[in-house]
Amino acid sequence: MPTSSHPGSAPQPPALPHPPVARAAVAGIPSSRIREIANTGMAEKDVLAFWFGEPDQVTPALIREAACASLARGETFYTQNLGIPELRDAIAAYVGRLHRPVAAARVAATASGMSALMLAVQALVDPGDRVVAVTPLWPNLTGIPRILSANVERVCLSFGASGWTLDVDRLLAALAPGTRALLLNSPNNPTGWTIDRDAQRAVFDHCDRHGIWIVADDVYERLYYGDDDVCAPSFLDFAPETARLISTNSFSKAWMMTGFRLGWIVAPAELMPDVGKLIEFNTSCSPAFVQRAGVAAITDGEPTVAATRARLRHARDRLIADLQDLPGVQAATPQGAMYALFRIAGMGDSLAFCRRLVADAGLGLAPGSAFGPDGEGFVRWCFAASDERLAEGVARLGRFLDSRRERAA
View 1 (cartoon, rainbow, N blue to C red):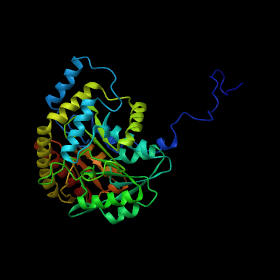
View 2 (cartoon, one colour):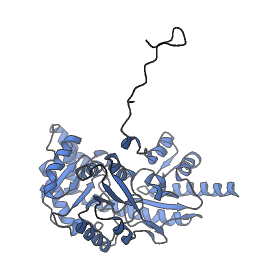
View 3 (cartoon, one colour):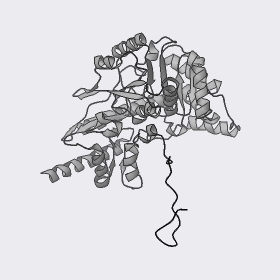
View 4 (cartoon, rainbow, N blue to C red):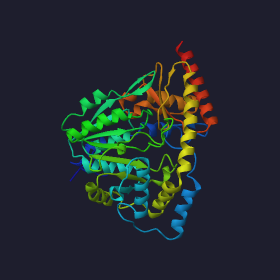
């Protein structure tokens, strides 16, 4: 019987041989530094928040009304694992309009773009596999292979006067034979970098020769600011339908549907039965009323996409010009997405800097270190906001940097 040195105290249970903790691959993944900053300031009324990648406008009425009409019809039951036929057909037609014809049999609706990425990597990657990612990068994307006990090698973009650029030769060298997959987000979160068509073709041809899968995170493809292009360059523009390519996408950004949690996958038809199994084991299906909203968005929401892109282009140009006027700030114009990842002179710890920025200036930005070690020294600003909010945010940053220089003098 266990005893205690203190009379009357309860006996202590023996130490557990296997403590109740998650496996090492999960426990070793750091928590979101974006959330860490947001959690410090979300309760404060006067904090101007630009930390999350989310449009600041509600979902358009035609999309919300489609969801409401579905609920009114009582569509509250399970649907097919891969999505309702109407949505799969609508996505296939939409992808065909932007790129090349795609059969609905190659399309799966998923419970968010995040889920699409997880499903894609689950379908391909085994423990110990080697995965290459172009970084800085949204941390969820590099975290997924680690959850599955795969190894991630980062190939970092370079930052200079012309913005963020990719050394294609360095990436091709990293994509050695035996690599299982390349993770590529373009336009990129957090930098706005967008791969050009020549680089895209070189990467695709190399991966095709060596049997390397490409998982393309295309969530920002419509938020691309080329003069005449309706979307960013895509592997779907030229890849054969049997290529080792999975394109993932989401309704969240271009249609302002972050809360709906709806995305999709385009993959070789041979892979789709296994994708369906994985959806069953992850979420079973997306809700019918959310999928009906997706049909409305992708069928009738092109004016929304055009207006969103125009508004964000204006916001981008205004923010970058204002940031470039601040002493000690080095900012370049992003080609796509909704973010500026810019350098601040003398900043060594972006997490501590952003904590101080919330506390002293009432300004919420995301630390560059949230996107990996190659993001350190930078901070990310989501510019999906009004002119007034952006102007006030820049003014607060300017006053904070002024006071910081005065303290250092």
